[in-house]
Image (cartoon, each protein chain N blue to C red):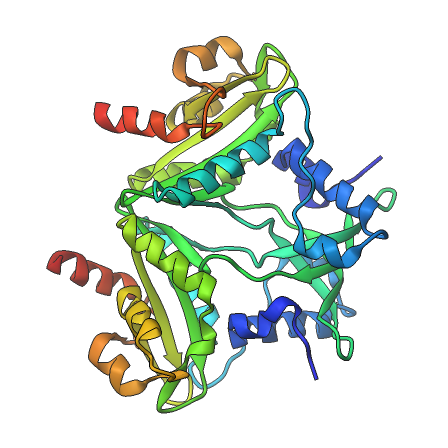
Length: 216
Length: 216
């Protein structure tokens, strides 16, 4: 039984993020030095990459091609104890995960502020709302009030389908959910935009941003 | 002698951030549980707050008054080992500081993307360039290319003076520095905008953004 700090479980940390961290733990003994410099290995599954890796690859593509500057924020960690060994780098020996107060991704696209969260589920007919906590919903509202572009990328791993849902719709559903703990796929299909993954970049979410900004 | 990982020293982590982390270490034995939930104590010095705390307070003010949504990014940390004690929260037992690839602060103000770094020095006649590393300069360039608003807030602690220097000027100086390791205060006075700290919010940098955006 794993217990996460301060409801990190509820925070809805992405599955891939959790597995990445565990993978690091397992590999740590092999080569801790290399682990510091290299990114966690990418899993080669059904789609070739996991969802988070696909988004990161998409952001790398946008960055390399001067299309947008969008980064994943570091995981917030509360440091309690640090050792400073002689002739060696500072080593954190006690720390805990903290709850994120914002979303995971943000950046700039043609002057506009972009802000989104990416989540995946193994459910097939609905997307669990526990993936989004109150803080994040409040943050998205504030971003929209500031005329930022806010959305969530929802990945149904079992269906291999990904959707771009504007945060306006997520917020609306969140407040009108009437006890529902998940967003039905039907609601998502009605209010979200499907993203094809058979191209480069893998999750071309800026195409949807272009579409919506033309409409507005 | 303290050695920081991968040139974290050069990265120019703010003085206040370093002391906060050390303070946590010293206090950890007293009450590790409380430390997780509470923020590091604010030092009450000459100006009442340290520079980073003043910026955070300014951002809190902007957020609370629906003026802008601007946050400090978490410090990037590479996790190597995590323990999952039974009936307790996940505990990180081995981790290292990583070099930030972007700047510390970003967010949205009236639809525009805001991106900045805040640094302080105890020098009186110039600002050491080692506070900014190559990655950050490249990041600022890319943000400007995407029409984001990028700048640095430079605080001279001994003079109790704070300046808003557009990243364009920092980048220009960085490339034209001709061997100089610091930005002379004269250059800063010529190209930057002074910020008054005798008001609320304490570091009203959005006033300069307003001014520059009207000019553009």
